[in-house]
Length: 82
Image 1 (tube, rainbow, N blue to C red):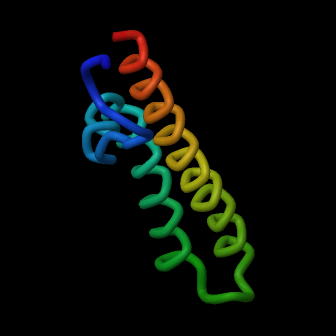
Image 2 (image 1 turned 45 degrees about the horizontal axis):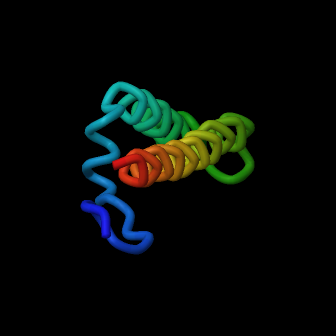
């Protein structure tokens, strides 16, 4: 038997975010700015600014999820080498 994790346990999300703090802070700032545009500048559902701000929110959310999955996969791959 080898050392390390047994099974397919993933590391905590906080650990993964600490590995790439700059990327996650950029993704978060993109989402915050887009949400601010949606709330402050956009008058409502009929505003074009509101709908244009939805795009970066969705894209940043997808990028965050993909980055977390990639970091988890790399973390699990490194444990298999031990």
